[in-house]
Length: 261
Image (cartoon, rainbow, N blue to C red):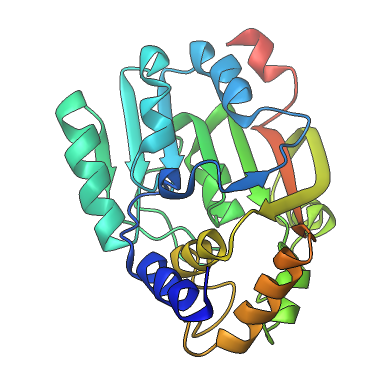
């Protein structure tokens, strides 16, 4: 494809709509390696023992919907970003899920009473550990999967940026858990892998969908970088970049409480 046609295609991908947390638009045009655990399988293992569930930062409710067959009587989701809040409400509210417009970060409180939930889950969404502990019932479970703060650091650096949260890793997470809460750790793992883009259009779409990775990214502002990456593809090189994830499972109270409930 000629340069002008390539750039025109990249700009089309830049304008392509993105909602929820759905990357089906670039299906087959990228590949993300998976960690040795399955977050969804672990949530499914926890759900039969839960009478109440909170999904922090549900996005458009995509993954919560996949768990519908195991939803407890009380199922609640939070989402802060307005487009996703509206989408999640449209999808989940008719099914009996309460969708709350609330922030998920390390500082602000959650709008729920003490001891509200048996199970709190969070996938790739920030959370306030003290608040999670507060709203968990005794013996309740917290399960979270997060991306490492150096996710795609090599791509970000190539684009002229730096990761916003380079300190965020499993050690940071566990230090906070042990220092700031009485939650009891049940399991914790970290993993590193790669994310591969098969064409630059898919990379453009991804960086526009995840705008905090490369600040002020656009085809125009980073055209020289995109052309350099295209040259690497043309030479037969794979555009493979480093990623990492972590998962933590903890319970509220003494480890034996779960066995008595």
